[in-house]
Image (cartoon, rainbow, N blue to C red; front, side, top):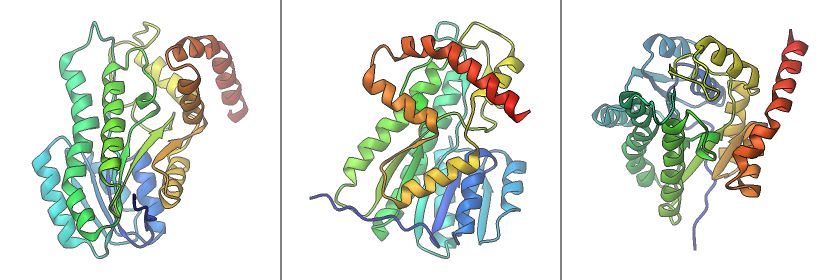
Length: 287
């Protein structure tokens, strides 16, 4: 019979990739407030330093490209030697996106997205899983997306990477059934982060080529703050959830894929005018 153990987070060492901004920074700040020593990494050295400056608990911060398997392994070895407490969670969070059609895709952009979003998660899992298995406790927490639940136009590479993270994490979960280690998949909806600001942009889902318009649209529809996302993820881990949906849009899309597994995009297109009106109304209320 599978053995289920609660994941102790408070006071345990936490590893966070993509800690320089967004959900990664918010998770670092939240876990620090719960007494967690933190091992932080990000490709953005300036953002990483800014995050580390807000942390009062013991912190180890390193600039790191998650695509580099050797660098991930080396950092894990350093963290293992440094860690002042047993490991609680490894939060594989780093992610990027590109907006382009499958037919007109720049292959190097697709490879960039898949290498960061999927292989970064795989490398991070492989680097720390032996440590967690040795202590027979802790959780590998891998960030997928609502785009790991649905496909979306101009997001083929991003969706492919996030579906892959979902499948990888669920497979790992079943492998860990008889251990004290858990594998958790996180599916954020629209979160107010810089992922679109840092995207490689070619065309949006309506054929537009105005990057600033796409950025503004994302800010209108992203309803959940990084701090709210961090609270949902932290709470979900502590409650033993294996899949964590972040934001009301994530809950809605998860339900929609079950009700209309093939026609969900048709439903979304019908709802689009209403959603846009609500978005404009919300923006007016906050102005």
